[in-house]
Length: 144
Image 1 (tube, rainbow, N blue to C red):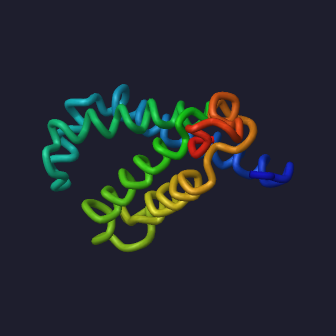
Image 2: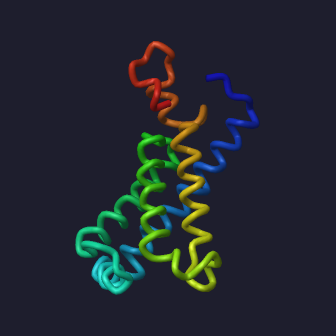
């Protein structure tokens, strides 16, 4: 795929900012709220299997965010993060309306859309994916 410098810059900026935000949310679930607190919060919000879902989401957001920043397995990680945010939207935030100040879905929808965009475009030129899988003859070029 031939990407211009502007496209490369845009994808890299999106990947880094989105990765930072996801990693921050994962870190928050581990360190500010604790996993036990996150499990209790998820259960109170009606998230199914909160005992399993909370640590899985915390790991996905923290590790996935770091992976996005570096551009490692970006398409796969971004798709998982997009699904994670759609789950948060439909299970928790939709009844509160659009605005985050009211507990609404504007932030999770934006995060889902950004992650979906990266799942479609891949990590771009400035990434580990490109370095590992970017050769046109690579059987894993779809990951680049």
